[in-house]
Image (cartoon, rainbow, N blue to C red; front, top):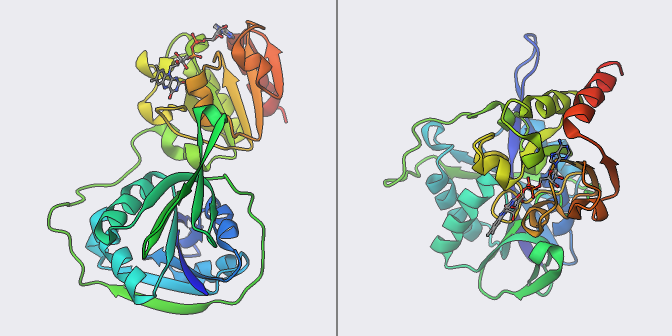
Length: 326
Ligand SMILES: Cc1cc2nc3c(=O)[nH]c(=O)nc-3n(C[C@H](O)[C@H](O)[C@H](O)COP(=O)(O)OP(=O)(O)OC[C@H]3O[C@@H](n4cnc5c(N)ncnc54)[C@H](O)[C@@H]3O)c2cc1C
């Protein structure tokens, strides 16, 4: 039996005045847990400084059998160097063979640090992992090539692309364990302040079910307000092509593509985006792609599920209006 460690990301769900705020598992973790449920694997979910009782039943319903509460000193709980030290020690304490985390900002900060300390092989942005043979699959050249990477070592670390695996429930019962990391400190890295830096960060691109993204066809930063209003109605995250970012219309955190965020939402709506190979590299795995473009010959039009040959500056306000009216 192999022990598989899974790094769980959590959020705080704000409750009304009567109740206390609650911790909840981010929905993007459930696909990763589903992937980890393989033959001869015992699953250990690692949760950093969260209310375990709020998370237990959700994690059990996806097959977690060991729930490890990693407790850090409050002043260090957001410090990735301290989290990495805790992870390294916990991996040893619980005899973990492989660690699965997400290729999210948190995972990108944590997993390489832990891999360096453990001298462990690390594969990020995996779309599949075979835990029997320790093979990882990653997607390249806009999904045209899939690499299968063989890993070897005492401990192996994999960063899983969010939404790459469809979550499937499987009821289990979990025992609660604790890892006490309250004495861990980091000497070279200090977190001064944390917070969200812009409005578009309200819904994380990597976690969104729906993304509405704008490109050169949006023409300026003001016009991005049009898709922002539509995104609010759709409860969607905002994305952009590199042109829109390079023009300074929107921040880099919104860029989707080869050199931006890799996303796999249920629906991706591309507004005034031509569909370059570099843009496709970041959103090709979306389950449904809808393009709005006035050029029927744009590459995206032949690589999407639905398209509207139309002026995006006219169609988006119309769509927002329709959504407003239910
Ligand atoms: C190494 C490298 C890395 C890169 N990484 C990325 C990356 O991560 N992400 C990325 O996006 N790009 C990336 N690029 C850039 C990429 O090659 C393209 O230049 C870019 O994706 C094009 O952006 P776009 O589709 O917004 O613009 P364009 O290609 O100029 O397309 C604009 C589209 O908008 C349509 N349009 C114009 N006006 C309207 C209107 N009113 N209504 C409807 N449609 C309209 C046009 O018909 C056109 O199809 C990278 C390039 C390189 C070389």
